[in-house]
Length: 307
Image 1 (spheres, rainbow, N blue to C red):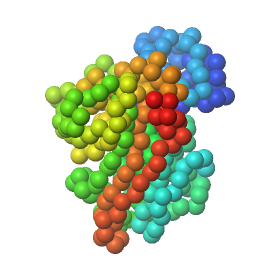
Image 2: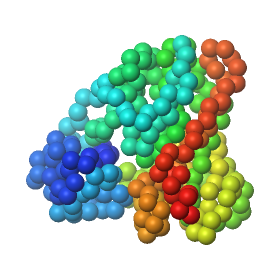
Image 3: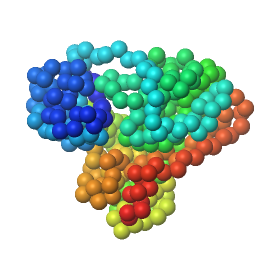
Image 4: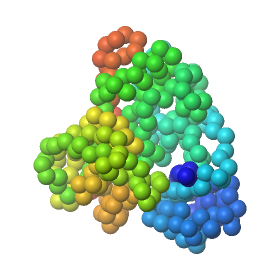
């Protein structure tokens, strides 16, 4: 067994060797970090690297640590999150527009900003339901995915929304730019997802996995890529990224799941083109169906403009 730890390399570590960066970010000795790299347990932007690899600010550093290695205590640290928007706020919920590079909550190995930390810094009181490091969280977005998330403030809100997500009574809408042109242009991907047998930090379509259903339709076709609207029937980790990679149409910029790095560079992308644009659910207080929307952040809009 291993613990998967992920961190966005800060600008202050620009040009550092990966073993030195790991020592700073994960509290490891340089020798331990070098051994992990030699064993193939270190990746940068989805590619396995050796101990002497030089990191850059904004790189996604992923490390698989044996479970015998000590894990830090997880706690929410109040820290302002620049660029995090509040779309809606009431007694039961707060709907957040999460920027890229921000985790939903603290996790092993993550030293960057979190949505919960940003809310705490802004003075929000969140539901005490759930594990201590993820109280109020009923659904998450990947660190490298931006867009809408709902966090519960009341215990009633947490209980009702947690059940709604579990029973698939929530409308989750994403826009993603994928390589090539999917065939058909409107379709459903029904393929189970499990942890990748060869990479602890990745997932894959596997018969032994949990059910995963993704609906999509074409919004606009470009020369090298297609903009799709995606609705999730289930909510597996990395679901959209895994499903479109399995179709050989990976999300543009998603180097972890096989995207072309040359295309990403041409479009100025440093992450996957994936944004949670819409969220709809029955409000836990009023019982009314409510919907929220988010516009594309600057880096994703710029990539579309270049296309």
